[in-house]
Image (cartoon, rainbow, N blue to C red):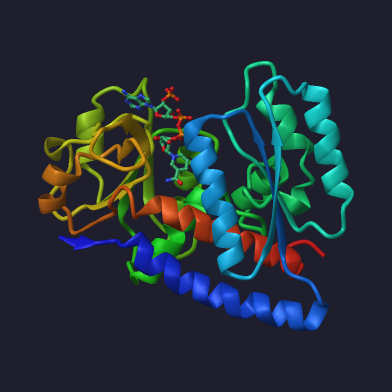
Length: 293
Ligand code: NDP
């Protein structure tokens, strides 16, 4: 078993990004700028946003955080998004999910200017991704592609089984792995909670992408020997063992699956770090007008 180390791969990518950001600053007189909107006080969301902001500073980007409490109205939030859309000094805008129930996440996603949608959730970006056109690829699937690339893993002709069909992870991942590209060129099976014989499906995977949101869901008896295992899950549990008061678990039973796998991502230290690398790459591409002029 070999580890797909998100720290190693993301640090390498961030060094390249920092060099390009410095060049961009020298040429344009400004830093690439990412704005994040955070609504409420969800512990997980706080941690993710703080980490995104910290990583922006590390690579020489400007970052701004706009905070609202849970009582913010949908209209107020949409008006703020419109305002940021118009701000020429902002390259990327993300709204951390989940949002309170009274705010429609679809409206929020569609209100973000697709040219600043560095999370890659806007229908224009998803549509362009379907057609293999330049676009912002959703940050987590993008991060997984970057991870496979960093380790020179040839995915051509392999059977990729994706577990989970969310709009932000599982569904775009299935499309990207089937594209005529490398990483890609896979035969893909997309599974979800209504899938019959899930275990038999996952057992067929040369590559398994687990994006379910359930601790240790993928067990050793579900994976074939030599499979490449990508664990997207981040499941937080309170713990007295850690300083932070919680512990993170993946969707894969790492301890028992790892000995069977050829490659496997750890949690933490795997896909989460690559997601940030994907987000930073999208933000830099936006600043440099590499995708939309
Ligand atoms: P969602 O809850 O949006 O989607 C979960 C998917 O898993 C759904 O498609 C659901 O099926 C499927 N599922 C649930 N239960 C089962 C089951 N028993 N058998 C088969 N499929 C099942 O989650 P996300 O995609 O947003 O996130 C998944 C995980 O990844 C979470 O732990 C999340 O925290 C983590 N995550 C990590 C990121 C990172 O940077 N590492 C980024 C984003 C998410 P159905 O559609 O039928 O309901």
